[in-house]
Image 1 (cartoon, rainbow, N blue to C red):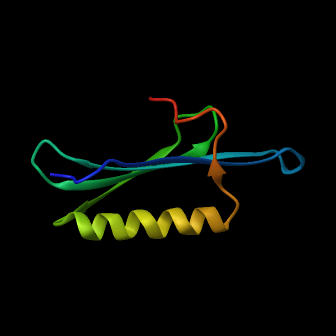
Image 2: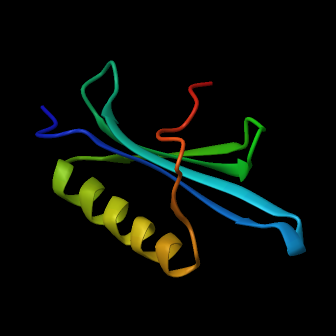
Amino acid sequence: MITQPYRIYIERTDRQKNMARFYALAIERTLFGEICLRRRWGRIGTQGQELAHYFVNEKEAVALFLDLTRRKRNRGYSPTKRGSAPRH
């Protein structure tokens, strides 16, 4: 069982560079009980791309979740004023 929900949606925009990107991360269980870290990214307003990582234990998934979040925050991504990500 996942001890707490891990989910984040962050954006990076710059009108001068015509940049409008999003990055979303979520840790969830699959139907088979595996722990999965899903990453979604792309231009705001599009479906974007998705990548899934599967783990044996939650600790490894959380470590990657925190590392990826830190890297994106260092590159200028931040939580949106609107709230959470739209569901696709």
